[in-house]
Amino acid sequence: MEILAWIPGPWELAIIAVIALLLFGKRLPEVGKSLGKGIVEFKRGLNDMQNEVTKPVEEPKNKQDQPPTQG
Image (cartoon, rainbow, N blue to C red; front, side):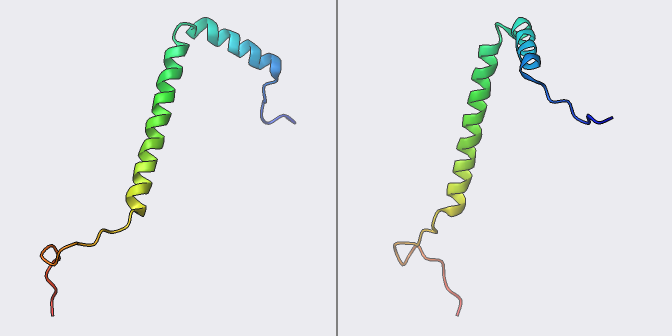
């Protein structure tokens, strides 16, 4: 019971890669493409959210645009 976690070596990874190619060979480019699009959309959403949080508050330009003050 000395080995608690199995870490695959280079030969095991090569065998797994060959099996994956045999099973998903024609679909791998499509999977990679959709994964890339998902990552790009996720980053775009994060950037939009960050821009929304950090954008400065715009001050009204005209006196008429200002909300009434209570006093």
